[in-house]
Length: 318
Ligand code: GDP
Image: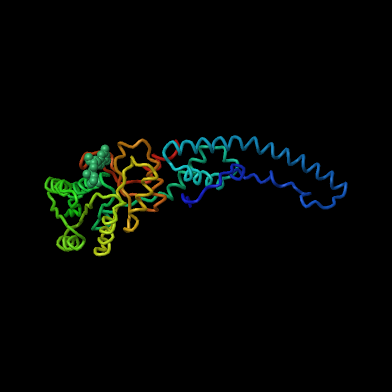
């Protein structure tokens, strides 16, 4: 597994299968050796030096390819440790003569990553989905996009609920969207009220829940969300993150929201991000599948369901 939390031992000599460099210390024990055996050891030493120099020549090319690919991953924002894990796995797993064939390596890595990348479609699998995450990442806009698509295009009956009672403007924002799309909007002040609205809308195909835009450091907000999960166990939680954010911020946000049973991730603002590697990094670290990617402010156009191929395109060296 590509485990981001463990340091990686990057040693090209191991990657290209070289064990010869350490395999000749026959006299390491310091015992008595007969003169005839000494000659044989001399021959063996010469043979070893020859093999090592042969290995060095082939290793140079494999090492160069390794470095180039690592650079390409890192340039795309893929965490360096993760890039090294992916590469080490490839170098160790493919036939040795293929380690100098970057095309072969890429095909291997692509297939391996297709196995590892996890995507999901929360609204086709669940009836009640809450969108949580830091303020300003685009939760309300994402909900409006999904509500419009599912209501207007897919002809599903929908209710929008909001727990965002901290900012009056926020509840107003979702009311406006509800009115335009033609779906009911309810504002709940706490988890108990929320559960009664969920009961009220039991006839709906889908219930989408907006939550207060508070940071992970806000203890009362996090408590409120875990209360929500406790009182309404049917809710599935989608954590919304901005793709403009740096790895450290993303990891800490995932950690901060981990008291809530997060089922999937959404990444917003891909149109404003320089690199997309952090999406892969966060998915791997959190072990949560990716759900939606949003690519602009337009409602409902700028949203797509995440696919493995799209993520590969973002992160894999060409
Ligand atoms: P919330 O506080 O998480 O609910 O965030 P909002 O939905 O209110 O969005 C905050 C701002 O981000 C608004 O100006 C949105 O138009 C903008 N926004 C949301 N999604 C995207 C996106 O995919 N791309 C861009 N460029 N802006 C977005």
